Every structure is written in C-alpha cells, then in structure tokens.
Image (cartoon, rainbow, N blue to C red; front, top):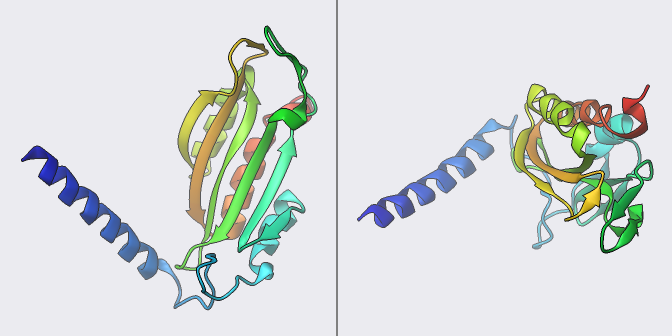
Length: 174
C-alpha cells in the first residue's frame, strides 16, 4: 500500500512540476533546448551568460563553459600528480526551459578549503545544491565536486555562478 502512495506522489510531483514550468513564462517560447525534432535555440539567448562568464561552446541547444583548475597541484598516493586535463575542471551547462527561463546544471571542482564559501554563495544566489562529493580517493589537497541545478533569468543564474567562482582558485587569493 505504501509503495502505491509513493508512486502516485511521484507522478503527481512530475505533473505539477511540468505544469508550473509551463505556466511561469511570459508567453510561449518559440524555441526549446531539445534535439528531438523541435526548433533550434537562438544562440543570443545565452548572451547574458557570455557577458558574465565568458565564452564557451554551443551545441544541440546547450551552452557549455568549462574552467580547468590549473592553479591546483594535486598529488595522489597511487596515481602521482593529477593534471587538470584529467578531470580537475568546473563545468557549467546552460539550456533554455520551455517556460523561457534559463536552466543550468553543472559542477564546481574545488579544494576542500573552498567548499563552504562556494556552497554559501550558491545558496545566497538561489542555486540548488545537488551533491557534494569527493572527486578522488587519496589525493592532497582533497578535491570535491559540488553539483548544482538552477532555473531563473539568465543574468541571475550567470551572476550566481560567477559569484561562487570568486571563492575558488586564484581569485580567492585576491
């Protein structure tokens, strides 16, 4: 009996989320971020992201920005030195919601001593935390992945991510 209630709740939550998303926008959007036969997203939709976070790549309706952590010297007990190209990177994905707002998902690559400041800034910006987890085992300094998701106006999402980036790497030292 209990499982049936959970299934009903899950279906209700999905339907409610879909309805809420479509009701939020200022009218119906003309394009969507999917590759399943819908119209292409106008790349200018991502201009606020480019203005705040810089250039990235655009593919299949998704704008991606990656920031390698070249400032970190990470040593591992089994693997030796870990280069930035081996996964020491913060990556952010932006795509248009059918409601007209900006969706963003991604992860910050942070040293253990940067975690709390980044988490605080993301929460202050209204960006939802998905998980905080180690990226490796046995490394120094300890490297963590902070995963997030957000939906808001493009400039709000971009500014929130930008503010969190100020707490990692070389910017933290300024």
